[in-house]
Image (cartoon, rainbow, N blue to C red; front, top):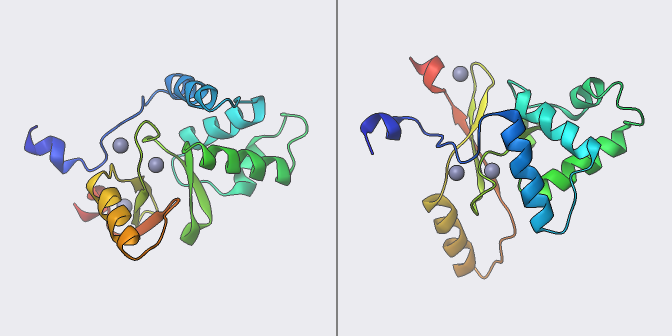
Length: 158
Ligand SMILES: [Zn+2]
Ligand SMILES: [Zn+2]
Ligand SMILES: [Zn+2]
């Protein structure tokens, strides 16, 4: 591991290509006895391709032409994607992002840039483990967590 690799906080755990990402999503859904329906697939695709965290109504707008896409349909698809760990909701932005780390157990830790508004999910392993053991010590059974860290991204800090 070089220093440059460490400087890049977000280790890609999933393919960057949309099609490859969707293929991984199919496998994850299948392993859970679930199915990526047309709408779930389309919503995930929009999230993968969105340059910034996407709001539900933006997704709904871009789903135009997908027939019966209504708000509840989009929210159900987003819930499904979150359950499978394929997407996360960033509460403070009220927006959603595709998860590139679905292949390993993790809590979602977002690095949110206060200047450009981009949100990057940190590849977190030790933080996830620490959170698990410390919540367990408090007698709490953790099901999922989304941590929102605010500051300046690499580009804006440069
Ligand atoms: Zn994630
Ligand atoms: Zn920035
Ligand atoms: Zn990862």
